[in-house]
Length: 371
View 1 (cartoon, rainbow, N blue to C red):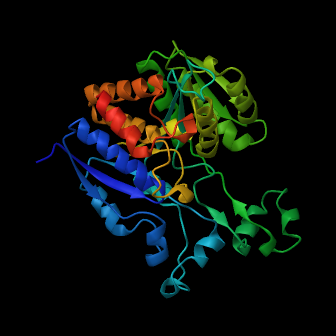
View 2 (view 1 turned 90 degrees about the vertical axis):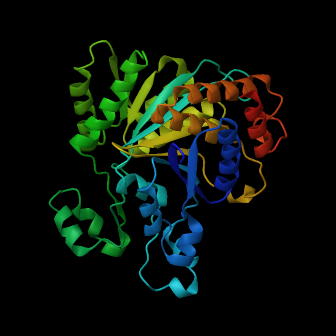
View 3 (view 1 turned 180 degrees about the vertical axis):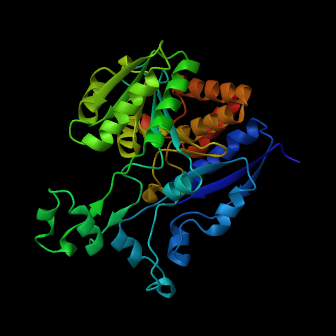
């Protein structure tokens, strides 16, 4: 019997390509795991009206963690139009399956390391090594949205004096996306960031929000961060606004160790940081809960490249490294990262985004040889 059971969720588009590449490397490492395939993604939305079928959630209960490739998401009207005729008119509402996974499994912590590996032709600033902690279940991605706005919701919101003017043109003229943040959610993600900084010898944690404008939600995040920081006297707490932080990350990326933010701002920060270290082809992520985790590269499904084995698999391979870290497989994690770093440094085998012409699988095979 294998030591680990891993849910295998390729998803859509190039998710299948990079997961195939991951399997080459996992097998070369002789990782003692059984991989259980699960249904997730756009195909299941079109055929069943559910991009994350209940059978997949049941499958996850049989596993230690999950590896996930990528998913395709589309706006409401496009999603409705692509339902098969037999599924239309049944009231199905598309919801991103990865967001649903995070919420259903309470994967509250999104960990996104952004590290520059020497040799990347597109990496113009070597030495960047920062980590973004993104709250994963609340904020702007909480999914509490309305259009058209129900009368009852409008009436309740009219307790706020600034709300009434929005109803003048009719409730079908209003769309609302909420930014819901809780004290416990803020405390959890900031504590995770400080714990990581303490464990890894990082000198600062930067909380990123916009409390001068988003006074209640941003204010809650910053106040909570100040409270948490008191328990970590050796680590500095820095406070920045999201717009200024984006500029400072481009200007002075080496100044930062650990950044922490709510859901949407963390998403923005981590993509920007990925651009500083070579692009999304090097951007890995872990969705971590109390008892379970889902590991995924941060890039999308890139449907135009589906099956072409064109995209960079390094993000997926570094995602496997995060899985090894979480499982306590330190030796496998170190071996994998060293092999990836060596291939990047030599710059002989790589995909189009680093100025080379190898396929996804050829890059994976080269990493496997370095093992």
